[in-house]
Image (tube, rainbow, N blue to C red; front, side, top):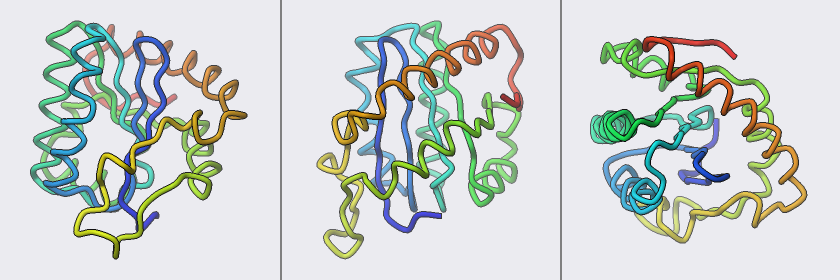
Length: 176
């Protein structure tokens, strides 16, 4: 589990994968939404995947943000998928009775890719500011590690197939 809070992303056309790490609370959730809102407006009917393997905690505001994203994506004809929930986050989602509300995927390839890249991602130490989840900490992974682009492109093709099946299925857990 990662101690540093951060958001990293990969986008490809109408697909966006967010990697959330650390403790994501109200300030971070607000920053997250403000950062991706323009992308959502420009990409109706898109697929948004929130990989939470490195997330150690989410608060009620973050849960509200996830619900808001889910509703907006569904209303626009797109898909919102939670992926690789860490045990603490899965427990929180389960306790709030939202596990069946969200599409949830477990994707080992995405999990392995995140772990491979995490040490190479620039991030702020938690001692720098009250909330290190600031816009300066957002990075498109392939700008940081360009040699990973082919792996992400292959992964996005896999996620696109899974997202298509999620759009056809009812909500719930769907293993990859």
